[in-house]
Length: 388
Ligand SMILES: Nc1ncnc2c1ncn2[C@@H]1O[C@H](COP(=O)(O)OP(=O)(O)OP(=O)(O)O)[C@@H](O)[C@H]1O
Ligand SMILES: NCC(=O)N[C@@H]1O[C@H](COP(=O)([O-])[O-])[C@@H](O)[C@H]1O
Ligand SMILES: [Mg+2]
Image (cartoon, rainbow, N blue to C red):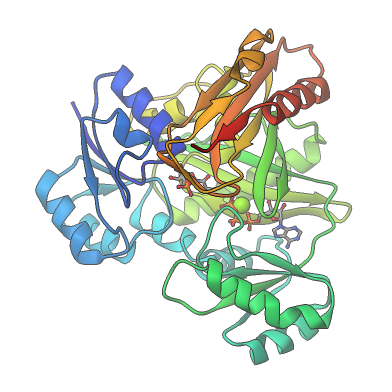
């Protein structure tokens, strides 16, 4: 059986570990804190700072894993190139993990090398250079730290007076050691999607039905599958996803994010791993959920097809306060609702806006996707995270 070193042990890693344990694999769950969601069910656990290359080397040396599976972005991914040289398999590849942890690397690859349509962008390394970049891009524009996820440190500049605050906010929310931001033109999109894309050892790339989602503060609130979209836009997105995943190389599932606007489809960014909005597949919307697909692609088990079995939605359960061992109220209401399920991730602490669980709803293929999504949203709003 394979030994999988999971780097990052949040909700996505937990579902991946469940999928792996179901088919008898061994998982070593790593994170920066004790009792992370995946650590609660993995075979072994380690707590290290994954941005520390020496600590990472020591773990790889200790376990000699068959697969190194990153689950977060805050990892000293430069070390991955060395692990590949030593014969380790990094999922999807050292290049994919390294490029996607830094918005600059992935954006330049997509826009300049591959010629994908993206929002116009500039980089800035100080308040002064940010001012200049904002003037060049135009207002409104979006500011993001080069290294961050789930909207951390991200803000929209609406007037010139916002520049200083946007810079300070970006630096507080940035997680790497790089004091640089990307300035993107604000795309007034009609809707946005995640296109889960599976690349396999047998060379066959498969796409999941598109996932629609709504974001607040740069973080997802609800997602639904399938997103209703024109075939031409979907084809365009699929072609871009195939291009970018081929350039990054390797096998696994990828969450490729797009904005669909009047003037076409914009590539935004991608995760070289299961995507948070893809938790909707836990509502059994497909023959395999995104974690099972990732696992199969990692292990080199062929996936012949991805089929949509029913429609579904997910809505997040967020905390509002800092607390230890929070509990939940309102789960009875969720449980009492038909065609509904939920997950509580078991995070040992809460903080404002931390994602603690999801409500999942579904219906038959001929059901109404807006109703299913509204239902998930309403039920999630009835769950309260209680601090002791
Ligand atoms: N240029 C833009 N124009 C309009 N909206 C944007 C733009 N960039 C980002 N957004 C909005 O902010 C959301 C989060 O942006 P982005 O995906 O870049 O952040 P992130 O921190 O990488 O989030 P995650 O890690 O959850 O994917 C997008 O899904 C979109 O709703
Ligand atoms: N958009 C990326 C994403 O959703 N990542 C998921 O959130 C966890 C971190 O959560 P935390 O910040 O609550 O510890 C990560 O470990 C991963 O599962
Ligand atoms: Mg994103």
